[in-house]
Length: 260
Image 1 (cartoon, rainbow, N blue to C red):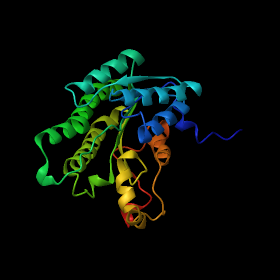
Image 2: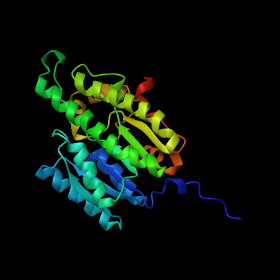
Image 3: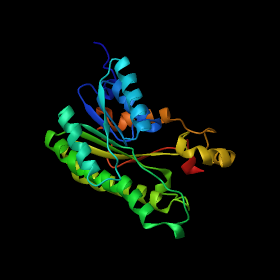
């Protein structure tokens, strides 16, 4: 009798996934990995001409590889953007089985100088749109008896940067929501987990790496900065049948920085 394939649980055939902020870097890597495992992927972007071009390039990579997906524009700073996006993706795909909440913004400034406009924009993008997507997409997952939600957190939810009061606080709240909903949705076959990247080579981190890269490396036991692809294995675990017994977790992918 042949051995069963222990990797079969990572396949996503027949599943549909919505990845927010999927036009580049971490979101792009996760979206392409899901497509490679058989999922149909909704590629969300904020709708600027640059973001639209990037999203179409991600979609082209999927289709060239024999996968399928579609691009969806939504500026999460706008009212009801999360609700409207959920409705558009459900209309196009029929249902959403996997929700990856990756899109976020950070505005670096001293906490004493945070303006109402900067506060409101970060809260709208990082939290309000997240809540709207959860409200729209998790109950149908519960009704079907299967679903995966993965929030993309940050080491800042535990070790906040002094110049990112709102961003770090929003990531801490997002993880709190993940734990809360994990308790409520778990009995119906829906898992909710938080994936927390460490220092990843992204455009967002470019300036910090240029000015303090050596100091950051000294605090990372594996001795290098992470790449977006370093998050793919963890994302597939948390969003597939292979991770069905992982719920309410905060999985750090930071090269060991949290122990240093």
